[in-house]
Amino acid sequence: MHIKTFEKDIDKKILVRGKLYLADGLVGELSLEDECSYHAWVDGTDLYEVEAQIDENGEIISISCDCPYDWGEYCKHQAAVLFAIREQLEHASAPQKDMAQKKKQDLQSVLLAQTKESLVEYLLGMAKQDRGLRQSLLFQFGSQEDEMEQSRKLVKEHMRPFGPGRFWEYGEVNNALEGAWTVLDRARLCAETDCARSVGLCLAVLPEAVDLLSYCDDSGGEVGEVISTCIITMEKAIQAGLHILPVEKRAALFQLILAEAMADVYNGWEDFRVDMLKILVLFCQDKPLLEKLSQVLEQERVRNQDKPYRYYSEAVAKLQLDLLERLANPQQARQFIADNLAFTSFRKRAIENAMSSGEYAVALRLAEDGILQDKEFAGLLHGWRTAAYRAYEAMGDKAKIREMAEHFVLNERDGFAYYAALKGSYPPAQWPEALGKLLTAFEAQKYPYGTYADVLLAEKEFDRLLAYCRSHMSCITRLAKEFPEQYSTAASDIYRQLILQRASTASDRSRYKEVCGLLRGFGAALGTSGMAALAQELKTAYPRRPAFLDELRKLGK
Image 1 (spheres, rainbow, N blue to C red):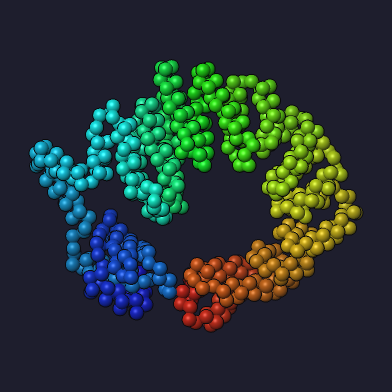
Image 2 (tube, rainbow, N blue to C red):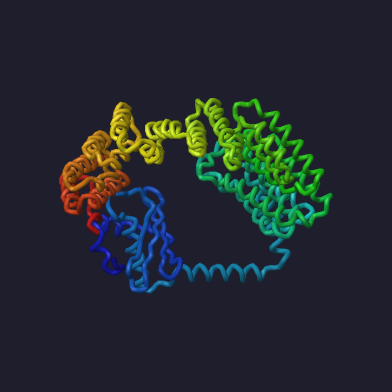
């Protein structure tokens, strides 16, 4: 599509409306961002953003609009912008980029021409009207002695309008984080050169950001990103500079982070408390600090061990184990693992230790105890059964291997991974009878897993596989290409019924695209001629769905 002749590619009604929009002055701020990228705002039902890329020869590489229109490939806002771009090119208008640069240079010249006193007077006047600006100026130009206080004030000042009493919806919190990012930018800059300063700046931000989570919708992850940046920056700063700090400064920094970690603001947000406690493990080179951290961790683990939410206690216990292993005390570490088998990660670790040392019976006992302990938790139960199976494999217990493999094949989502072991546990002459019983057990299930289809395919039971696809039509997308030639007509019919069913319930462009994706899969598995015929059938059936027709037209491209 070319900028001089784009009309031939766009619906006439859209072109008429686009021209009217341009004539009514609804295309605003058309600017050339670089050599081929244009940007504009179009005032319609809402304010819509249009971006276009046009190469030096006038070819339109791409054009997009954030309006919700999906009845065709191009909307009236895009058409209006294309008319505006062509008009600008025909009149050889100066690009907005150059104009913006000129304005920027003019502003610089104006400011440089002012006296220091007049600029100070102006900024003071502005700061009286804008408390956020006042704190930004104090943070930017104040002395380093006051830096931490000014940092906290800057962060709070930007969050002040977002305080308790109002819940801020998705997308509204970025303004509240301006001060936080200003402080974090400085923290990251000095992370490599001034460890304590960088940590202090991060701790000026972290509690305020965590508190903000309680009265905003952070679905976009903006607050989470600030918190993550605080933690990462502190860790990098300590790794880079802790070793050059004198003992007393290391101790003071340790105490600063510990006091923050134990603050009430992290109650209910224990993940962030754990992150700070992990950072404190980096101080373990100093014995007094190591002993202090060990004491705090033990108190936290014991204080929280009876609570129904065990994540925090387990995370603290893992930090304790990390300390023991850093002290190179393997015997004490193994005993600590044995004392905390109620935690999933510790039982897994104990099983791995037993397997690696050839203590398969111990590993089996640990797995079986896990099955009893976590029988109400399907995910954990599967993990312990898998561990028990590995132990039986290592012990060479063929009867148990067969028993557990059959359980996995029939009852677990990853069951087909155990199919070969199950089949291999039978002599070839006995397998047909065992297979018959296995398939009967599958068919007695109300909702058999996909393993059933995989077993049928492996055993070339195509009649049963076809019957399964008729009752579970979505499976045909995966299995259609696996059927031999004599089954292609029946497989094609099932695939066709699936597509027609999905088309009948589709009502927007995203669903139409899904239907067309199914059509492409149909063509790849069963032939493009059948795909073309079915696409034509859909065009005839749904003549009043322009977005659907548009997607169907793209199939041949």
